[in-house]
Image 1 (cartoon, rainbow, N blue to C red):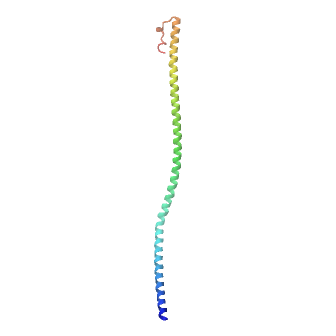
Image 2 (tube, rainbow, N blue to C red; image 1 turned 120 degrees about the horizontal axis):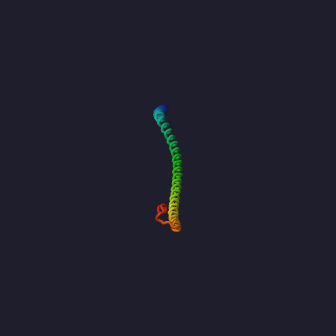
Length: 131
């Protein structure tokens, strides 16, 4: 029937109009998205470059930190070694001073005994009392 065909044609036109409107809305949304992406692209690229630069810097600083830790450990070991040598040297100095005192006493006794044997008075010796 003709009325049926007119209704179907009208429904088809309305459907086509709706689809056209939806397509135009979709294209407008896509244009807005594209504009947004284009507007943000430089900032996003800059952030990406910054992030890469930060990663590179962090890796370099980590390597430098490791190298510094190695240096600190080496310096600590050297300091411990130096302190040990200093304690040994101090102990050696104390031993040598004790030996020097003992030898001085022994020498004083020998000089005194020598003077006694030779008949000289121990008070007349100038060097024995200062040793």
